[in-house]
Amino acid sequence: MNILAIYIRKYLQKNKISTILSTLSLMCASIFFYIVVCLSINTIIGLRDFTINSFGNYHAVFENVNDDFIRSLQLHGQIDKVNIVEFKNQIYLDNFQSIEKESFYLLGIDNKTFDELGLRIYEGRFPKNNHEILISNSSLDDSFLNLDIGEQIELKQETYEIVGITTNIHFEDNQNYYTILSLKENIGTKNAYLQFKNQKDISYFTNKIANDFKGEYESFRVNDYYSYSSTQDVNRFFLFFVVFIVCLLITFFFMNVSLIRNCFKNSYANREKHLAILKTVGVTQAQCKTMILYEGVILLLFSLPLGCLFGFVSYEILRTVLNELLRSISVHTFIIGNEYKWILLLFTVLYVSGLSFICINRSNSKIVKQNVSLTLQSTKEPLALMEPRPSVHILPIHSLIS
Image (cartoon, rainbow, N blue to C red; front, top):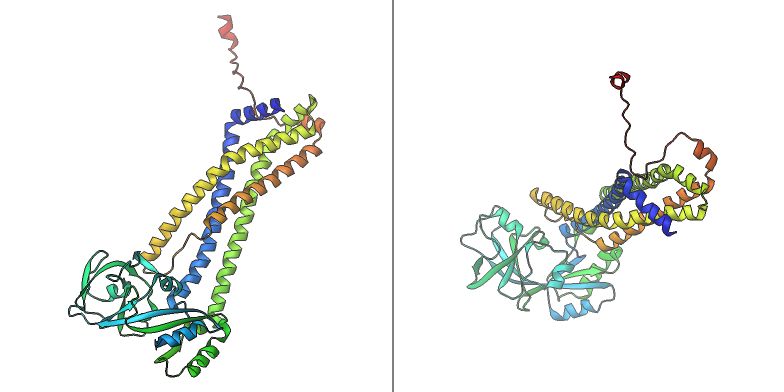
């Protein structure tokens, strides 16, 4: 088998064009598969997060609650999460002029609550102490304030440093103020944002809690997002979008299958007469099949890592460009992420490898069915294995006479 392995390596070296085309085919299959799958899955995830972030990741909110009521909510069997947001102080700035609203409200929140409520940092980081704040992007867009990350602002005789900008603070919805977020200090009034375990009974349990705990809160409301998201038009849109993504994946799947199949099909077709010649000198069918497998493994070991590497880098570049494009058109809360990137990378390796071995097995089945006599009698010439023979120049007769 060592001689046959040397033969395969020599064949791949001598037929550089065929080897390069096969390698590029497998690389392209890996790159495109990883990019399309990652982009499709993360677009669906991004659309889901965009909807949640636009309306708030909570089912109901009870405003101005006391600590006893919060403990009761945390022990309630139908409530999954209770997130507390402090309303510390309302701030009016003399130099603040807004198109829509007249003041800021300083809120206290911790990192866990920030994430669970579906809030997102557009730029910067989360505060680390009580003198660092996040400011809403809408307050900068709608006002004449010229603030940026790293700048300091004095509020109620306290100096705060801006460390980040948020994009989707739904506390501002239908309110006459913008929000500034700092760390929770347990000094202000508290609002409890609830997530129920069963989304179908949101209204029922919210009203039941409101009736059972009268006097322990100021007001309550149900998040309108869930009634909005259950409408027929929104469901049709999500269904259409998912169907579109699935059809795109199926179409690309067949294109990818064709690319890999043609790679190994053409490789066998170019080797058909070589294999027939080898059979005439005593090479068995098992050895011929092993040769085809060995050649496929060599191509995979070289092209698959490169394809995955280029696919990984290309997706990160594409994702960055698309997110910057979305930001440039003021779509800040829709972000294409990189969820499941390592799982999808492993899936890409398994998919391309598995499909390649299936195609190699089909080529091996043709070896078994190969008719050596008919193959040798065909006019098709095999690709050259050895160095090309020097061309012979025929001189004209009159030159020989002279």
